Length: 69
Image: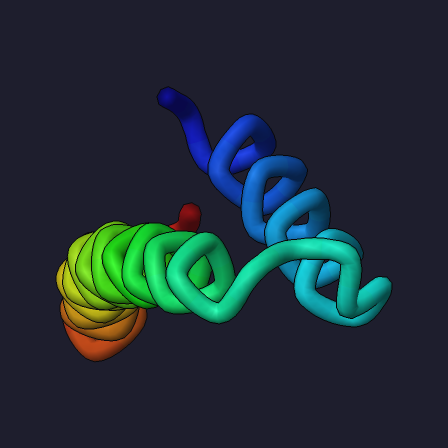
């Protein structure tokens, strides 16, 4: 599942839980599934943040050396 699909699935889970049309057992399963999706999204965002940080450091290094970008 890509990020957009994960966000869509998370939205679907939230809507099901908001409607109160599922049993307690189903609610717990949905909550667990949503929690796993959130963990995956945080992980992906942290990886992206790391990549952006490295790219910014490289750009700053070029600037310090007086090179044009």
